[in-house]
Length: 224
Image (cartoon, rainbow, N blue to C red; front, side):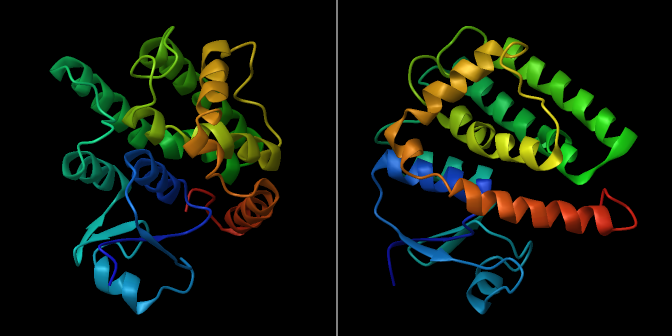
């Protein structure tokens, strides 16, 4: 068995962030692709609580939930640190990571809704992204300063996934005129080699999200 193994799904932004962290740290690992709609015994065995990817298995011990995995990676392999040295700066990075975890579903609600409900979701998403730009990113190149860090990894899905969500949903939220600094951050992030070389295929992702939207809109309650 590999010393480090990652159970993931190609379209999962949570899996992507773990891949980026491992590669930025220079950690060799074995990747195992999982189908969230046909879960293997391996996944069920190693994440019996939530039964979801990603799951990092290190020396036979599983860690679930991407935010917990990122913290584990940072503590276990201190080389190429992804959190700032200062206690205050580390606290701020964790604050914005938590903000992203709590607000991601609200931002992505534009994909699962239509009509007046989608209009409300779009407005809420714009407001949250404005807060993120002004209070979290500010005038910095990355959330932690001049180098990519854990907060950038946590928000990395915005750089490639949200544009696909906008296309599928037929809305525009991440407008360059309204959110110029966030757009600059996206450009900077996508130029980091590890990010640039480890993004899912856009056309494949487009088809996947189209099917997801159709499924959600067919439900009696689109918030399910």
